[in-house]
Length: 168
Image (tube, rainbow, N blue to C red; front, side, top):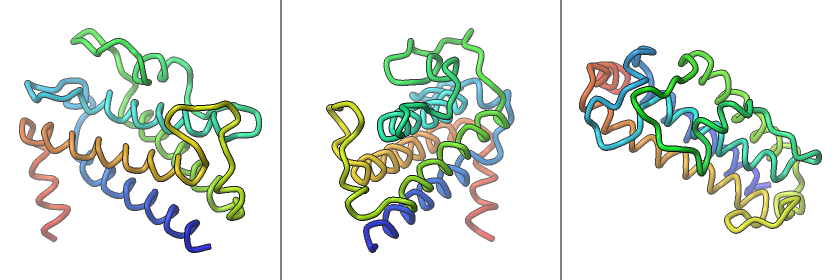
């Protein structure tokens, strides 16, 4: 089960980085990019949850996800670009959605046999060809958004939190 362990470690590592780099923002900070060339933190977190939910829906037995449709419409793939008028859920709500997607993906991996990790999605998908590959790719996607948070930190006071977290 080395593949299973590696996937669970990758998921955990990606979430650890996302949690560390998104710490210290207020709900107000999270709604604006303040001139950074990336979407606001609230959009980033909602997008990670929505895209992880895409994987959950593709590989769950019933096709059901764990993220509300309203968040998927706001931050999912193919959604309209955010504007200054976009209204996001609170950071606490977004973190609950992220905790739910993370726990669901980890459970899907932990309860899969090696053959289960190789199983295809319920419906054909251009990006995801097996559960194991999808979980790996979606963890990399989460790490991509961790990088975008660095741009947000440069324009907010949240940079102090990174120094506190990593320089203890």
